[in-house]
Amino acid sequence: MSDATYKKIEVIGTAKESFAKAVAGAVEEASQSLHGLNWFEVTEMRGRIDNGKVVQYQVSLKLGLKLD
Image (cartoon, rainbow, N blue to C red; front, side, top):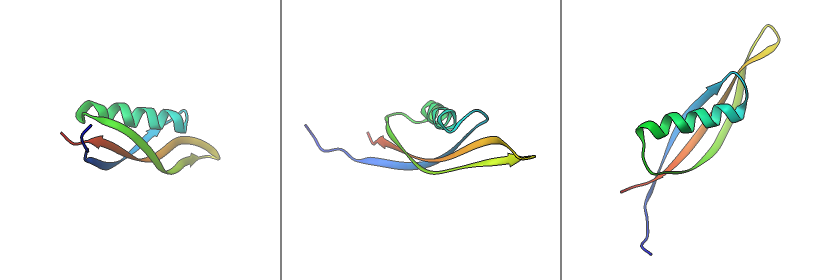
């Protein structure tokens, strides 16, 4: 088994439904232009409030991918 090198990038996902949907959407979107995604790490969670109601969930993610 050979050693590997990985790269971390940061993305921000948003969703109207939940933090989980924001994570899943960000990973799906990133995987369309990045190959070799292996893992994610949620670094921040926040949301937007409008008229006393949560209207958007936001997550900052670090994505790890193996370099070719």
